[in-house]
Length: 489
Image (tube, rainbow, N blue to C red; front, side, top):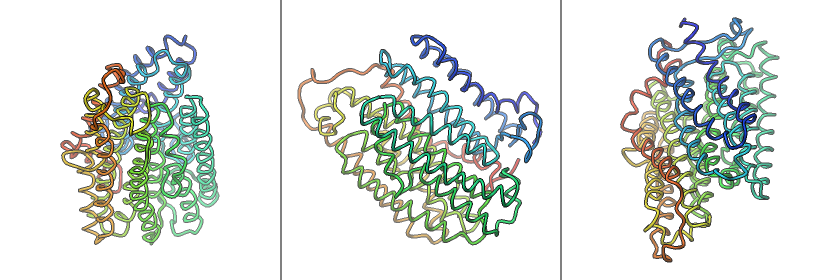
């Protein structure tokens, strides 16, 4: 749809402003970087809200940068998934930034955090709105570099080792993705997703390219059994970094995979879709079991992310070859799961970090007695856990309900069992934390008091993750715009 230039330019501003903020925060004196970043949160939020209003008013639209239309030029698009993820990025990044400003006050890590934070945000927005596979590659590369830098900020041996493993995984994933890009360009002479969607998908080149790119993106998403890099990176990073990585960064590579499969998937891919679903099922149970076995709190939450990633990959067997009704339910359930998990996991990491600050130890066993003194942190962790377990009225419950309806509509009883079994495992590791927290422990002088901003940001995210299930209809309708599951305008 054609829109006014000022409206279309919102897409460019959402990439350029965080890039400018990254440069600005590097140039400013260290004492001003956090304050400047907090001020810049307001225009970023306003731009995202204006983009959402434009989508609701005009429907999906495209901005051709420099006036060159695709496939010759670079374009940014505002469809349902792009705008939805842009708004989700704001909803996660703003509380994490406020949390980080208090968490890093007086710490050396703050020197580079803010520039990397803004580069990360610019990369995410680039990925959400890109319309060709090479720009998606550029976005995912910049995202990986920013994420690795954030993981390494702590500077100790554990953080540096985790960052190196993350970097190697990111580079291998990028190599596989780039091989697919080269094959597609050699076979079709275009990198535009819209143009590639109109080409002959039955070509062997297309299938091989899609397989290579999917493998690379599965590694970046930490799909079982390619997940070994994730728990050390997410569990060992600074708390606000862990929240950003788990809530947003791993979703970016999954988002690209969805874009690619919509545009490139040849007919008869049910076997490949089932394979992805089975890997997702293994992830649900392996990640849940490993989370239950962890002795360190943030590593428990990190392995929970491995498990929750598995639910996203159930989309492929539920949506491919199962009929229109089942596919739409699978899309709605997957997108709601993505949003709910992002909010709940960000809250859970922030709450876990608050508990670790209070007890001065990362060990779950050392939580004994904290139930009397850090009620808000435990409340935030518990509310987030409701979403992770999939209990009503959380978004996690709505997502699992939709996925279960899709599975039943397509006769996929195996996927129903995965959804139920995964929920039980989630309950086990969430209640493990509370079992230790309410054991009678030492007296009050053992615990520290984290700043109020740390408690509030975790609680706000947890409450939003709980309430999103009650207001999911409107967002899900928007998220279908511009996809095979909804109207195009």
